[in-house]
Length: 176
Image (cartoon, rainbow, N blue to C red; front, side, top):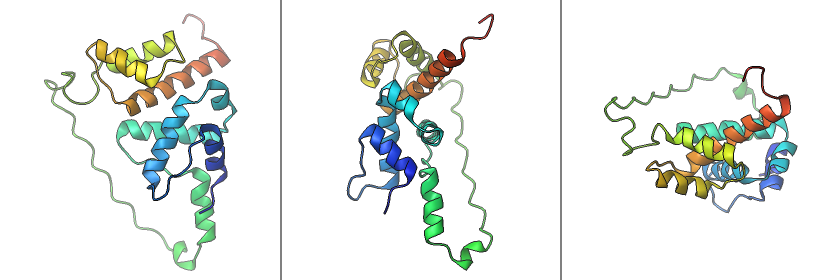
């Protein structure tokens, strides 16, 4: 299957290629995680479509959902395999069940998921040292008795770095 323009751009930036027999989701996840590790100048050179896909993918990892295909890949595949039957209205996809919130007594006990303070600590570490690695952040959290998965740290890191770039580009608002 031919690569879409967005996929080619991301592969060029990350150097990550699809492995033989790799599922779409495994491949997308490796790309999203690799994009969290690229240098700022490479990130800044990516198109809006590529950065939007990466940010949406990072959020999907955090939410535990599936990562969407590359945006232009879906259009390309649809054009290549268009048939009259496809013009018929589609059935609505089944609604996803919402995850039940843990009872308040279980939240923040450090036994499951990310501790409430972990996200703040991750952001503090990144703001103090933007080039800090995911591994160093995970180790720093463990020293503080907090835990987070490398993919969660990677996703939070991407969002924080993007916010820092925006603040740098547009400046802080008055009174901030």
